[in-house]
Image (cartoon, rainbow, N blue to C red):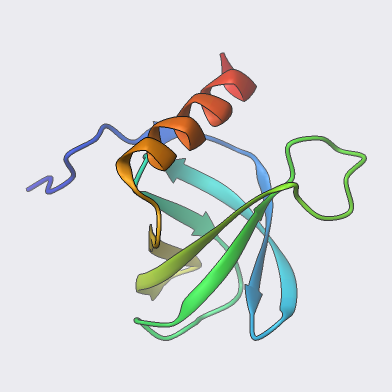
Length: 103
């Protein structure tokens, strides 16, 4: 049963994700205004807070668009995380930026 309030959007953007200041590469599998699924070899524990740096342009060494997210589940090369400390206006702004990248 689908529990999401917002529709997931497929994506294939590169990201850097951080655990304690160390950034490792990953790819976005899908995203909503409130959460993200990242393909990665990393396996953080549920509850771990990570940084997600979106690499919107190939020439950027680290993403200008950065979000914090709490890991909700992890396994089989996928990390499911919910964005934290983002109010509804911030979520809408973030979603518009990301939609501009793919639309």
